[in-house]
Image (cartoon, rainbow, N blue to C red; front, side):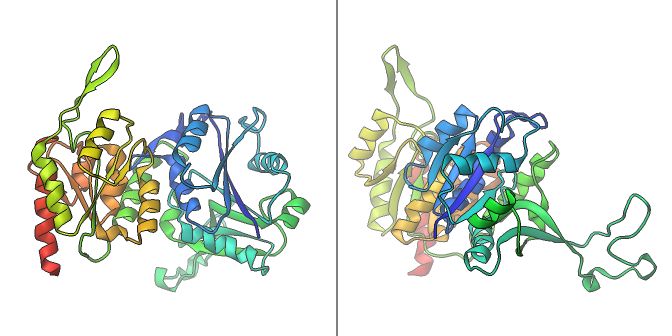
Length: 387
């Protein structure tokens, strides 16, 4: 079966300007659900948008997977008055209805993970349901405007532990079969299956006050991935602010020089000699950095990576490693998701505040001044407890 998903994204947003591109734990909002969709059972994910910046980001940053495609969203379907169903129909027509199941994923629900996607998708793929959606159980007492209690008897108010509550749509995941979609022109229809998600996923990005709440929920979710401590088998390093002091010299010809520490270079040799694999991942494309990595014999060097979280997920999957077996060393906001989710998040003394607050280890060393050597010493000492 061919399982297709669409993530509709508008360039315009009256409530929160550019909300789909706002950074949450260092990643654009839409990349959270897109990244999870990549590692789900979906075959193709269409980013459907009228935003040129999002289009380019999706095309540039997800070349490592064959799953992500970009579709132009018409001015009509991206208007304030257009329904999501209108966008779904437009997308379906563009791909000539080439799917067996169609899944709608909402970028404003960044707590959606691959298990949630697979569960909703699986209910329809199994043939037991024509469509399915994600919901959250709420234990709130619901009232009508007429003063009627709708889901409980106020004369016999139940205790929370005795109250089954109600199921509410959380707007995260919807899946329907092709036949159902053709018949209803809607995300739902026929026999409908229900997948219950955790209560915190009821929070969506609709109002500005949701920004802080959502980011904290994302960070808390990432930290839960760490699990029990394991031996560190690989260390992932950022470049600027870790190998260097974060400064770069420019001339009219372009990038002129960066400064690297020879002591840090020896630190990488010590790391290898202790059985820990060094990996370098940077958002920049620099010929100077490339030359330095060759000199240091870094076989796993990944330049030009903006979505470091998803890219690292793919790298680790191919290597057969888990995040809790990794130390991640970074200093800026685009490192935050990996700092929070890897077994050990490590940063230099002068890392940005958000990173330092969430790192497991804040080194005494400053950027470019033996950060790697200090980090290696910590890793070697930590790993000795497993020998």
